[in-house]
Image 1 (tube, helix red, strand yellow):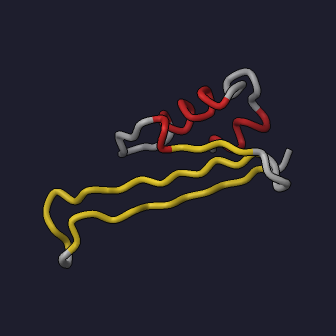
Image 2: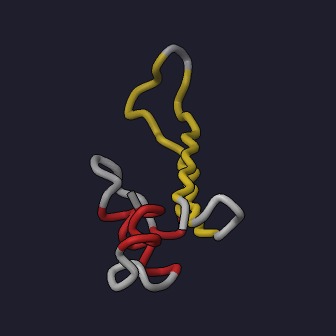
Length: 76
């Protein structure tokens, strides 16, 4: 959604920090800092990536945490 915002809603997503804040607002169910998201403009268009380590409240199958990665690129 943040990559799309960077392409189509340039008033709300006019800077890297604005795009990161938009991504935070749309990360439903997670309490993540804006620095979780990186913004780039490669050949594919506007790209937003995120890496977040999710901590389980209790171990799950021997895991205490898992790293989540996501990336989206929206054409300009």
